Image (cartoon, rainbow, N blue to C red; front, side):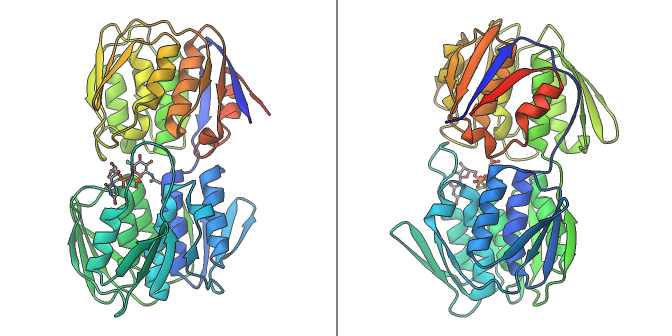
Length: 417
Ligand code: UD1
């Protein structure tokens, strides 16, 4: 099994180009199933989750090839409506094929999803909302068996809780439903806006009619298109924190800074200097980091996907900090590993109390989920000596060329195969 060896403690300096967004690419790839025409996608990140989604689409009959940096998807021969456990188990976003398959075939069998072990992560919100569009379903032997006896019919749906995946699945399905669908209490993550932009480009009729409200007029014709996916705001946030934590000086490029305003404001509040330009930010880490009390929240709140990374930085703060994790109930698995490196973090329910003024000590570590893995790299980058991080396959699900990018900005890191 591959490992990463990291030698701290270097300041990260230079510039970094942010890749395309994994979490925008996944629903957009699923949404291509609506089409029988050619779709070209640009700026997809080269990460394992995207590979898995491409394999899933191919298993459903999609013809897919890369040409230069473009992914060309031809769904004119796409003819299967069965998404197997072997492909959906490693990635929760696999459930996003359910909406488009129902829209296209009126019937689908999709495995219950897997993904990071960060809580129970059910799909009840997806399924209840689908039933309002006329979907009948049952769950047997780990599969959702769903059908639409009268076709998908537009409806008014209020999500009981904000869910990124459920909002995406319903937007995609309702795009081909008969009549109009109004979705309220939607997630408004930038990746959802990217999905909506993509769908409108292929001929769907989707409009934001309120802060968390979307109106979708079902269509029956989908056009050919070429679409470039947005930047990965979580990758950008991770490098922001890396620069701050190593007292580095980093230009983070290919981004739209206003999309990561909360992250920029948070880092500024704790003392990091950030200069914002048109498509880049310059982060200058400072020796003194101020403590903070913060909670994760749906966009535009502080992202749960950056909670683990921020926690590493707060271990260096001048006083005690608090992070309340309000999205996932079991997302503190990095804490035990960080404590093995000398951190003093205690957990009380969904709150982490983080003692400041910690000097991390290098150690052998175990990655447990995608964002936890990267937080261990950040801790290893500021620890003196050699750390070894095991089980890095989690990391490869979501970070493109991470060692290469880190090496370029001065980190001493290598992969052991
Ligand atoms: C997406 C992101 C993930 C991010 C998360 C929250 C992708 C591929 N993944 O995940 O990186 O951490 O948003 O920003 O974009 N829930 C239910 N029932 C449901 C659906 C969700 O109870 O049917 C709960 C979840 O367990 C969780 C919360 O709702 O506690 C939010 O989950 P959701 O927004 O759906 O996250 P994902 O779409 O899985």
